[in-house]
Amino acid sequence: MPKILIVDDDHATLDLLELFLYGDYEVVTALNGFDGMTKAEKEAPDIIITDITMPVMDGIRFFNLAVKNEAVRRVPIIAVTSFAEGITAKSLINIGFSGVIPKPLERGLVLTVIADTLRAAAEKGFV
Image 1 (spheres, rainbow, N blue to C red):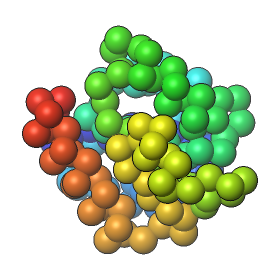
Image 2 (cartoon, helix red, strand yellow):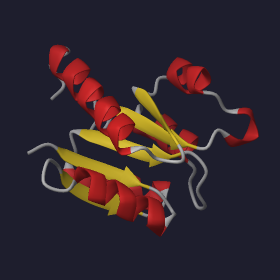
Image 3 (cartoon, rainbow, N blue to C red):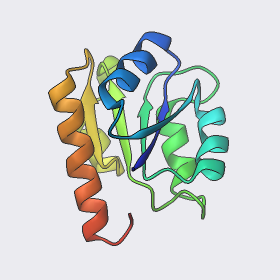
């Protein structure tokens, strides 16, 4: 069963994503990027889903640290965002995110983005 780390400061978003993924994925959660990085190193997830706007360490900073971290750098990272502050899906993909899930969350889209990301990672030999 693939393991997914979800990094988001909003408990409702964490609960909804866990509900969407229940039974098909092992889910680990973190409430900010700092905690997320610690759990990513410890848990060795197959995929990481991170919110962009969070306290302590936002999703962009988390991503930038992850790609430099030997233990985490090959893990695909999906952004979850409401596209505030001029951030677009294209800009997040250009930075290097493996996928983007817009808020409000839609179960079908969440599952499709995760499946596509895992498939692409497997083709590269990352999963």
